[in-house]
Image (cartoon, rainbow, N blue to C red):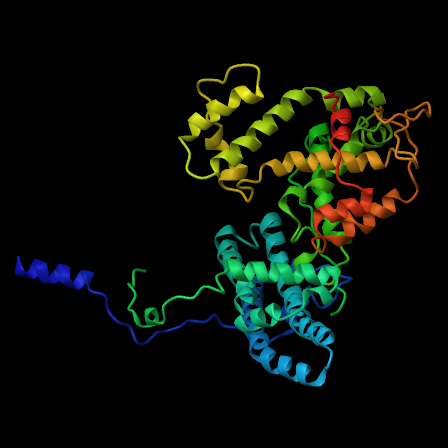
Length: 466
């Protein structure tokens, strides 16, 4: 019994550790093999994928991670001195703030570009070549890269310098970058202050150059068989158009900082606006005719504009009710302490549907967008993006006075159709939604495109819900 008590005492005892062994990966010097896969050296050429190996990719990413963390900390160390020198030389506080901003974020942006391009290369290989980038290797590197990428939000000197800046003297894009950096740093706990004595407590050892965006759209298609090519269904083509929207935003962005480029820093309820916008073109007779034909004879599917509109509106009412139900359920599940999810689901169901709920209904258990995705309490974003996209699409159908024209040329605010488009609508879309990225609030981006706030009427007209 005495030996048992001593053994138990040793297990529960918290041992103090005064020394550590830190193992670092071997990082070779830059050589010709690594330079060949360094996609930041030449923006007009694709990486030489045929020369990539698992070892080369792991070595390069390990080198990038260490370089990124080291150089980010170097920015942190030199900022106080540089800020002091700028304030001493520059009499204007506004100009001094701009110089400090450039010193910080131009340096970080240069580090981000090199790091993100290499990281994107590994993600591309993971999706396209499991032999070169096996999942068991990729996820270890991927998680380590995510940790390194967050290092810039834990820089106390940089954070204090940002707090001292006068945001009103910065450009709109710079204000958004500053706002994002301040928010992410606060969420990372940079302002948390604990008791100093906690440091001595033992712990339990339990175990600015222009960068061309590099984007990929990876398709998982069925291989051709029996002499027939790979064919896509209408829904698959619609899905392709949907994802091409994000590709456009990432490729046509014209921001100065990658943290607010493409869909980065875009509010969640606006991320999918351009995705849904592109899908609306599939229901235009001319576009539909260009995209379909029999693979052997070339014969076209003959569908009129009215038939395509009816296809889009088929069961639209029940689909909208379903989306409203999911969005409301999502909000209720995240709105403080609540009863069991089944009680919430059965309470909300009659408010959205005209028929009784199935006794085996278990929607929350398979609500992956909310349960395991990034849209907790944000599922409404899908429906809101679809509503806004309809308003944007109608801008391409309106005449110069904001009315919609039908096929005969008559103008009516409640009629969709027509082929006349205001000449500068496409340019406005490119210069707003496809250019700003997250450098401007999404509500302001829409106002600059349409000259007003979003309207729900185009959505109701498009899906014939009125």
